[in-house]
Image (tube, rainbow, N blue to C red; front, side, top):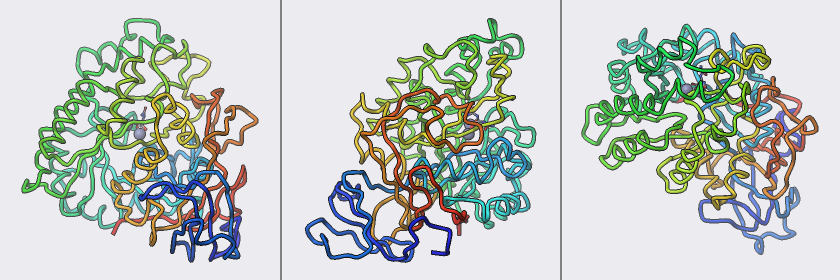
Length: 473
Ligand SMILES: NC(=O)NC(NC(N)=O)C(=O)[O-]
Ligand SMILES: [Zn+2]
Ligand SMILES: [Zn+2]
């Protein structure tokens, strides 16, 4: 390790624990790390006392670092909303070792080789974890295969598009024709298309432009403006093109990933059906849809505003069931912060406030804490937060504690509870806008290693930002 990159600057050492989560099960033993990679994994009886550089974490859990495939770090252009330094410090403090940054909310949006270059320049030397990039699929480039290929050649891991207005002027929405064209290019690269799946219906959008038909400080007013039928309409439309991804189809090799599913009813049923038919499709949901329900969102508390919206408690139960059944494939943060002024916290107007939940540092304890009721296991956490996200983002050397993989590791204590208040070290730029502040959670991150560098330890970060930008090849 270069000096300053690690709080434990050794290039050859062992991480020991009684609970190491591996693809072969949970073992008691040690993980040998050399030159930033995992070189061996040994069971307790085989190693005790033999090695010199051992960090023994006792009963704390050692598992692969989380991979967040959906984060908006807003850099360059809107770094006051988050930015690479604070966003990746928060990620490291939350046990996330890799994140894939979304192509919008930064300015300019990442939709070309030139704008990707700006992203990479902004990220270099200012990231504490590994960071990759999604590129934007927008009307301007969708029918221009040369431009899309250039963007994919330049290293984006796949593309992202919106089927409704994104709220960002230089990131317009796409329709099924654009998506079909994008998929045919992605097929050659075997990379995915991620889609924000809501289609604004004329009648209901009318409500939003008016006053929502009710008190704008009441969450139910906002909820009515984005009904589940918006998600259902989008998924239905998407499925007209995902059949191209089937084996032997014109876009075989491409993959469609539905981001931040909130509707656990018709939209999910359609996705399940498409999977059964052999379409290459996956779906994620986010901790805020699993933690909160519409009924409990206080009037005027716009920290909870996001799109698609958090729905009722019955829907939340269905989301958990779908996750436990394997119908929802993975989790992501959809960390989408802004400055407190745009959340309109004083005004409390749900119709006008910025939509997006600030969460990146908290997703591990949130998933764990709210999942207790459903009996979630450490292996499921790893599957939802590491293994499957790694696969989606084409990160074959990440996502598992396995020999040959990058030494990307989170060490945490599932049983330790804490209050998310001013006493808890927080690294997101604008913590006041996070819906999780004030909650009591279980699951404290002790240490985070990225490629063998101890980048975070009990409230402290490594002196230097030595995360890598990861480009698809
Ligand atoms: N422009 C945004 O970042 N929007 C985000 N906002 C949310 N989720 O409320 C998103 O992912 O759609
Ligand atoms: Zn979205
Ligand atoms: Zn998002």
